[in-house]
Image (tube, rainbow, N blue to C red):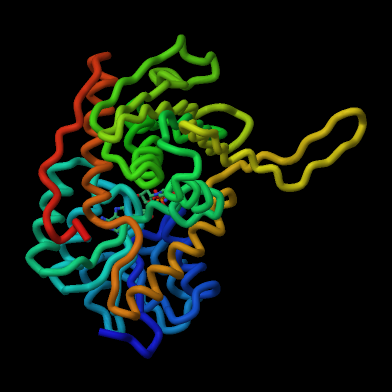
Length: 340
Ligand code: NAI
């Protein structure tokens, strides 16, 4: 169905990402309006909804989805709450943009895939926004062109200034490396088949109990190897870099060579401090593309299968962390709905 009126969106979760997406939908995306906001914390829901004209605040996500004028749902609650919200949205046949992860576990993702398949068509996009970053898009196009030959290695670095004190070893995989799992699958066009994790002696800056940094290595069904340095408490900046090594050359992104200043015998520029600034353009493009596709009655971007594939890779990654062994990724066969 094509929408001619602005798309009415219910935003579930009014935290960091939910607030950023409400601002984006309200001010930076044409053809959409925020019709409802839900957060378990009533004050937080009201504070986000009140300044937006015609936007109702709720504490129950399902009540927000059932509110008048809601045509679609953007889920930005914590990962463990996603499955219930996704099933409720699918129950109403509503299109969804779900922040990553689709679900924290592959079993939950399979239940979501089953519910979507019952509708006979795709409704879900997963918020893997790197696919909308201009540098990632250039690297993807270059690799797809075949100009450099077959990709052999992908070196990735993912550094945060710091993370919440409740971040665990598993969070490094589920919250951070999850992005590299999706980006590598998308850039290479390969599925991830096995994961191994290596750890140096932790940094003295690492919080008690967190083994930081770690090196996550994965194999793909296209014969490539991917290594990811995940360094959650680098202290100096938010950096996401990738270098593809191919048969006839290499290509690298994420060096952030924006403004370079020469002064006082040094040269250099700023390092981003947060994903909301590093990927600001990517989030804008992602949400615009979702709104445009939804109004056309289409689903584009990472789909629920991609969300499941990443959940399966994360399960292997956390087992590899726990056991110190190479762990094969266990996946079901891809259903027909997700093959085209
Ligand atoms: P946050 O902790 O800042 O906000 C979460 C909000 O959801 C809180 O206000 C909380 O009260 C509310 N909430 C908790 N349970 C709920 C439920 N059942 N229903 C409705 N609201 C509920 O979390 P943040 O950082 O905004 O993360 C939200 C989601 O976005 C997570 O899935 C996270 O993995 C993802 N994320 C994605 C990023 C990306 O780069 N694409 C970056 C950071 C987070």
